[in-house]
Image 1 (cartoon, one colour):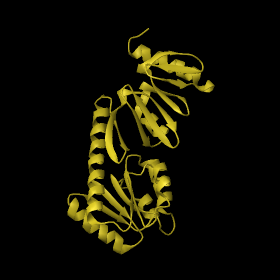
Image 2 (cartoon, helix red, strand yellow):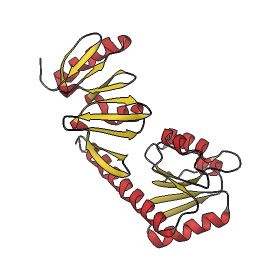
Image 3 (tube, one colour):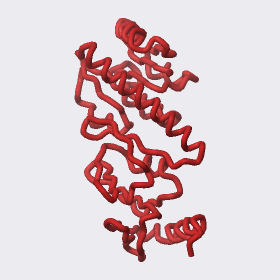
Image 4 (tube, helix red, strand yellow):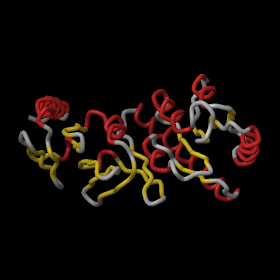
Length: 240
């Protein structure tokens, strides 16, 4: 497990190093004093504790650049301010710790991050074996796994992604683009706000896709691409 701390204050870095050493002694720990130093490193952390207020690149700018090369890192922002909490969702932050916090809270957040990192690694291994992976999301303060094959369609509404399954609708803060990349060729982005699962389509036309549960709007410019991909999907499944 590779854990990194990025904070411009040495005493804060040392404090985190001590806490992490006690909670996760087997961790491969790296300490950085600036966002620039972190971004220049060849090491890609599994978990990153990141300060927001730093000279040069602040934590939010650093996280955005980091995401371009490391999409799987679990980012925990650590700051004295809560002004950036909504921006944290834009870079897929796992948690937003506001100083001061006690040891119990830190231990809880770090343990949850470690568990999620291990879950992600297991899902990636399953994907390499050809199994359809699950999606780990955070909703209502809990981390849950949703099987991608159970998603009928997804939509974006009010900064949230809503996953529609046959049994429930699940909301979480996230980006449709990231879900689209995770879902692969079993799904198609028919509109900037809608991602549909080919396996649940009943019928479609140039404006709407009708699914076994609900319906989704089709963007005119996406129609031809959708039809081609849907035909390929049916060929893969041996359908006519």
